[in-house]
Image 1 (spheres, rainbow over the protein chains, first blue to last red):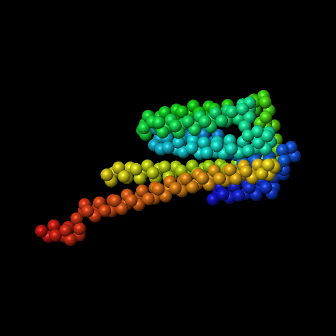
Image 2 (cartoon, rainbow over the protein chains, first blue to last red; image 1 turned 30 degrees about the vertical axis):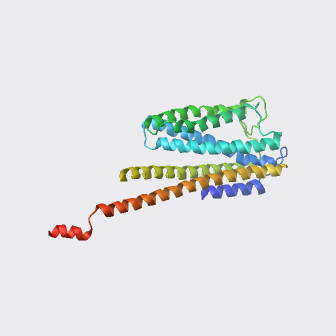
Image 3 (cartoon, rainbow over the protein chains, first blue to last red; image 1 turned 120 degrees about the horizontal axis):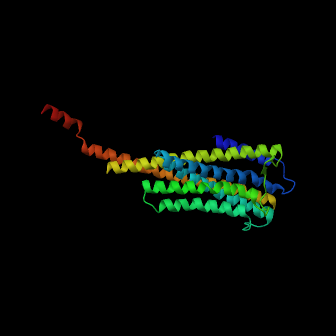
Length: 215
Length: 63
């Protein structure tokens, strides 16, 4: 409910409150969905790595499943980042993808790294070995997040715009408010999906256990 | 295509991906519901065949 309310408010703010960018025109409004999706994907990957660390450190039951679901959410929002970013790139630069841009390629590497996480999991029999290997993989992947984030600032090609600088966000107050509401909405949506998917996975595990017991 | 078309395309892609995800989760939950219903039916049938009836229990108590 919170996610729906925040996203509804964000869409209203994007189309009726936030001003049209003087440089890029109306296509700049893709920013309000593209950047929140990217930041949410980073947050999901970081949460997945944290849960993987908890699994390895404390052996908390269910931490492996929580890590898996968080990374799944991260891949979904990562795919949304790539899709919306590609549409924005076509509108602004005239190309769907620019291979010379390091930050785009690094985000793609991060996305593919976590997409391969599912291939790793599916190739190993369920059990402690799979949980441990998946956790180590998830923790290694999180190192790519600061690299991907900093690449936008360190890149020399200046194709990808830098909005958040040391001096503060390079946008008007109304644009920043719209962005914050949109990001809160996307984060709330990811949190809702995380809890629903996790509840489904736990229920599935219990149904399997029950089936084994009844045999 | 104009900037407005690209903007609409980006928001529609977002909506479509979210709807596909919700549909997949809905299908999985429906499958779980079916599995759980069949397990409950199976457990009920098994308890009916395994446990003695009320009359049988009373007979064994008297006898």
